[in-house]
Amino acid sequence: MSGIEFLGTGSYVPEFVADNDKFAEIVDTSDEWIFQRTGIKQRHIATDKPNYYMGAQAAKRALENAKVSAEDVDLIIVSTCTPDFFYPAMSCLIQKLIGAKNAACFDVNSACTGFISCLDIAQKYLATDTYKNVLIVSAEKLSQQVDYTDRASCILFGDAAGAVLLTKSGKRFNSFLGAEGDEFEALYCKINYQTNCPWYGDINEYYENRFDTHAKQNFLMQDGKAVYKFAVNAMADAVRNVAAQGGFSVDELDLVIPHQANLRIIEKATELLGIPSDKVYTNIEHMGNVSSACIPVALNELFGAGKIREGMKICFVGFGAGLTYGAAIMEV
Ligand code: UT7
Image (cartoon, rainbow, N blue to C red; front, side):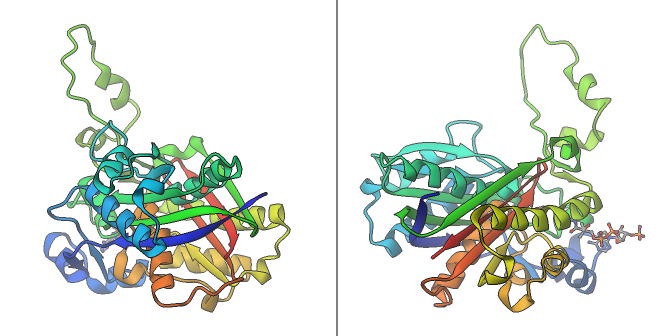
C-alpha cells in the first residue's frame, strides 16, 4: 500500500469552557461522578460560531503549518456528523472560507470514526497521482445535537475541529474500517424534516413504533452501556486487524491516538492489546468527546508539543455511531 505523510496539522478549539461544575448546575450530576466514570473535567462549546467556521479555522492553521497555499489543495474531505446544512457539503463552505478554489470537495459521515475513514479515502486518492495535496477537516459541533437535560449523555460531548494536510510518501500506511449496522440504535440522531408535502401520510407512525419518542426532538440518543461494550472490543479488533494487514506487531507501535469517548474505554481496549499507558495519548480530560475531531485535535497537540518524531509508528483507532469502527497505522 503506498504511503501518506502529514505536511501540516491545525485545530480550532472554541474559547467557552464548560467544566463539570457547570453541568452540576443544569443536571443532577457532580464533578466526581463525571471524572471517575469518564475521565472528563471540561469541554469547549462553540456558543456563537457555526461548525463550518471551526473547520475553516483548523484548515487555515494546517495550511499555514504546512506552508502550502490554499490554491494548491486538490481535494477537501470533511468528516462531520453535525453539519450546519444538509447541503451543500461542509467541505464546500470551508473551501470558500479558505480560498481553496482548485479543490474538489465532499463530506464523509461515519460519525466518530470519520477521521479514520478520511485517512483511508485520502490514501486511495493520493495513490492515483491525480491528487497531490489532500486536506482532511474533521469538524464537530455536538452541542447542537446534545440534549442538555439528559445527564447520561450531555456531560460527554464538546465542540472542536482538527485538520491535516496530506501528500503521498514512501512510508508505510495501512487502514482498516468496519461497521455493525445491526447496532445502529445504540447511538443515533434522527433528522426531523418540517415537510409540507401535501400527499404525506403519517410517516412518524413508522418511526414511533421503532424508536424512543424523544428521537422526534432531533437530539442525540444513546444507549451508553451498549456503546461502551461494543467500543472496547471493536477498538481492540481494529488495531489487531490493521496491524496484521500491514505486517506490524502491536508491540512495535510507538504511539496510539484513540478516539476520546471515555477514558475507561481507552484503558480497557489498550489493556486487551497489551499496550502500556505511556504509549497512549489522551486529551479527554480537557476536551471531552468531540467525535471525529478527537484524533486530529490530539495529533495537532502532539505535533505542537514536539512529541511526534520521524520514523514513529502511530496508530489511530476509533468507533462511533453506525456503529462504525476503524484503525490506521502510519509511519511518520
Ligand atoms: O463517541 C461515542 C459516544 N458515546 C460513548 O462513548 C458512550 C459510551 N458509554 C459511556 O461512556 C458510559 O456508559 C457512560 C459514561 C455514558 C455511563 O457510564 P456508566 O458507568 O456506564 O454508568 P451507567 O449508565 O451504568 O449508570 C450508572 C448510574 C445510573 O444510576 P442508577 O441507575 O445506578 O441509579 C445512572 O442513572 O449513574 C447514573 N448516571 C449519572 N449519575 C450522575 C448516569 N449519568 C450520570 C451523571 N451523573 N452524569
